[in-house]
Image (tube, each protein chain N blue to C red):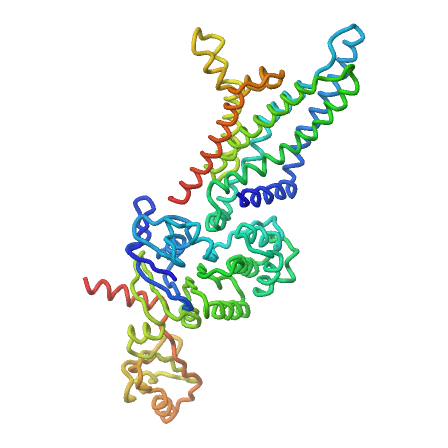
Length: 308
Length: 247
């Protein structure tokens, strides 16, 4: 459904993305992870036909984004990062306007339907300018869903939503992703883990890794990290933990807790708990900590540097 | 082509949702109304002394003259505001050609001004009933064709300039400056030149209207002039939108 090869885009002298290649199949949700300015939005804008690439080729829904831009745009739903909306328009009128541009039959019924999907049916008669950021986000999503697009491109779809809405929107995206192709960008690792079948990590305009989130984490660290906390004094806690079989390293933190690592697949937690309690501590917390996106980046970019 | 009308319709709604449309309508209809009553009053005085019957063409001249100043206000935010708010991104990723977007914006403003012009038809109608044997409707028709062509050209140029800027006030002043130049300045040197003056006169927006269509003569040259300006404005706007994509 999406096939990108050798995509490059220059803004003047600055190269925004370089030689980006990937593909996405129907019924697949692909996450685009990367820090600010990594080239996520640029890539998405090229795929939606908003701007042409400097070099390379992209086929979306069977059409070339440069040569057959209009055909691509008919088949793509797009939620831009900033969710640009007309503040002085009524919600219903806005969606109807976008629907008419996309020549949707029975547009009024369809607008009601998508408003229902994003849970804003009651606000249909209100002005867009009076909506909260989360509601605007959902109007943007409604706009992207209007014409039942084959490919959905969402730039930071859950940003600005409150936790309940985040769950709802994620469920909605998962539902849509069953039959269609979804490409979404995010900087939240747990979001990518939660909804994406596959993740592309992009840094400084280049794709540095492409895999499932579980594989990425496992491949990168090869170890699980856990934080342990006890009540009261914990001076020798790190020493106690370090002695346990299977623990690779243990480090005391300033707040009194201790972080330790063990090899993936060889769970050392039960043994650690036992030893800590035997040593007379009152165990109050034993919590795994995932690798943060920043750490994954550091890992990937430093791995990159080492190769050179 | 349906897209052009969809965009034009939204733009029309937008005019009536903002005070701008009412301010422009007021600024056009009030002076023309005052002017009309003055013409009637002077006409009545002259008629007592056997002078000529009043003629409605000065009012259309005033309409076009006011449009020089007011149409930049109608076109300034058409595309510049879309760029500033970022909504251009949505329109440019919808299945709409760049030309359809620009032409739709222009059409919205054009239909609004046509509505205003239609309202001024009441004056020739009133005048027709005051003078005997009535006014020359062919002159009125020619004059209104002129009004339609001039406003089409002015609004197209304004729309084109609006596509270049992201700031509506920059668009406003550049448009106003261009119109001022084309209306007053371009033919000024013509009086002092021994040859070449005709070319400058041809470039002036004013001469094609006030010396030709508003007096009841329609030349092919006048029509070509205004239609070329309209095409130029829409073409410039489309190109500006395309350039935005590449940046």
